[in-house]
Image (cartoon, rainbow, N blue to C red; front, side, top):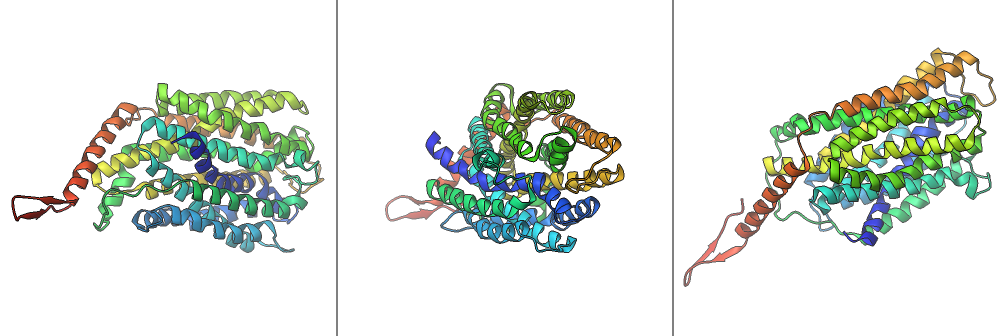
Amino acid sequence: MPLPRLLAFSAGSIPAYLLVGMLSTYLPPFYAGKMGLSLTAIGLTIGALRLADLGVDLLLGWLMDVTRTPFGRYRPWYVAGLPVLWVAVYKVFNPPAGVDANYLFTWYILLYIAYSMLVLGHSAWAAALSGSYNERSRMFGWMLGIGVCGSSTISALPLITHNRIRPADPNSIPTIGWIIMAAATVAVLITLLSTHERTPPVAQKDRTTLKDYLAVFTNPSMFRLVAADLFLILGPGASAPIYLFFFHEAKGFELGLVSVLLIPYGGAGIVGAPVWAKVAQRLGKHRTVQLAGLGYAITQTVLMLIPAKLFWPTFLSMFSVGFCGSAFIVLIRAMVADVADQLRLETGKERSGVLYALVTLTQKLGSSLAVTIIYPILDMVGFVAKPGFKNTPEAIRGLEMCYVFAPIILVVIGSACLIGYKLTSQKQSEIRKALEELEARDYASSVEVLGGPGETITAKAS
């Protein structure tokens, strides 16, 4: 894909990244601080909605795979996610006084549904645009880079607005909601107008059976990817909901600088995603993920060792952590596209929607489990999230341990899940060659073939 069109298509990642940054980093502290919900109540509520939401992604993925429209298979679902986002963002970012856990549950789950429609639709659409092993790494690298670039604008709001709008300030949350709705609308329109969806060469009319979906869940490569993705999301996800607490309470930065320190972390994704995609072309995707996991463990440890209130060393350290972490989502999702090719060759059916539903599910499950686990632990160590409260040294120490060591352990486990991964570049090239030959035969058998004089033979499509 030419770079200008790839950049326009990649803008479609911006809405999801705007959501994930707010959902993981700023909204839980907002509801715990200004809205007065306890840390345990927030953790349990988000854990409960994850259980309620478990089947939503798989259902959406299945519906996308069986959709047939002149507009495309995945594009309609991607576009339909926009109005859902409008409603959910308005309700979550503008809660009424006296809000309770039921309100949080109801509108958070709608926001997750909007997120799923946008991510699943865009990712499966991207996978359908190219079958090349390396081109997919390039595409998903730019998608992450542009998405992170858009979400980093939220972190830069204190600088852009001269501290009038600060994501860490509860009073700024409603304004940020309106900014997200406007930015998402523009990004979706750019993507929609810039790129068409490639339709399948032959319409698939076979009924989908339970065996077809068991092939998805029992595929060894996909099983490893789902396990790796869960832990690789849980790692950074464990630090996201306590990021504001850690840098304000433990590191001593004021709220404006806390938001600014997310700029190098997000900006590193813009630089890191294309770099890791290039590295993957030489080392292979799974080995590159493992290398990035090792780098993440080292850089996260260095971040902990930096003394409080040292801005520039912390700034550089955040960049290095974000650089390493940017490899995970890019390469795992590019690897999912390779598995989709393998399953299409084995079963004759398109399963990209369901496959991306699985990794979107792990992403949401990982980020929500982090809140469900970490927030009750903070309650147990006596940490209080209310603005202006002076926490004890023991509570601060517990906060530091949760922020640093939990992510390291989880990322190392996720990297280890890819030991022995079999779907290499060479294997995927063989699969693509076989698919191209199959598609050529299907196309040839679906057209009317002229026989001898006065005889017409119509071949039956396989």
